[in-house]
Length: 298
Image (cartoon, rainbow, N blue to C red; front, side, top):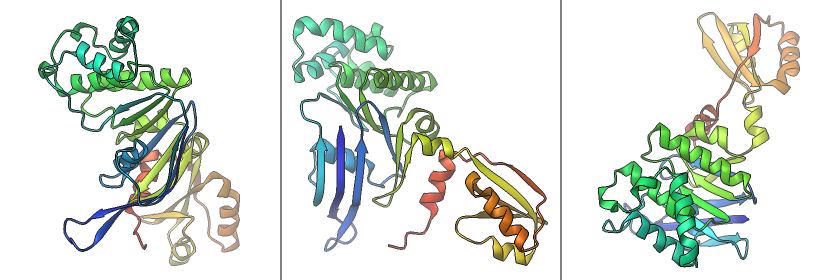
């Protein structure tokens, strides 16, 4: 559905006018048909730049962007702004007519869109009377009113209360079940973890990690091994594949479950006793924090 390959993008630096700042560095992202794919990263990581490049709003320095021919597209920007003198019905008609929806079909499509976002009672009200959360719901309705094949959402849950977040969560699941493709950015990692088929983690303009649904499931399959603290044990467990933390008189070591037997043999061969072994759930947030706090040596 979407294929982004080896994307580079730079822009003039505000601090050093003679130099250019690299925004995207060799970024490749694939969003298969019928899947929900997320891009996560800190502010300034390059997420919105990727979306704007896919949509053709900006041109990359190099690399390719491919979107399947003949599909319809819906888009919600990070900070949507609409003419506030419009009613919600007029906003939806503006969006629907832009994608070729006929007036006779619009009534039913508008009804379905506002039902999905819980705005049935607001159709004739002007946008200037809407709260931030209501404007966000209106923007989502405008993005889906023409029933697009591909939906691109930049921070779709921004400004929404817990009920609104649940609404977006259920809507995205429903659209995927109907074969639609969704690419979105979000800072709400718990929702990303439960919702997505694939996740791309960005840091400083690069894709640092690509996780599939299977990878996300495996993040929960880690083990924690407790050993008595000693200088010997500390030196032995400083390898990058292990995550060792010291507690008073012990060391806690986290590793992938597939490494358990190897690690136990490793400790046994060096005469380091094991005090305990237990499961250690690792969330997407922990994976994300580990990546973005790593020193960038490039």
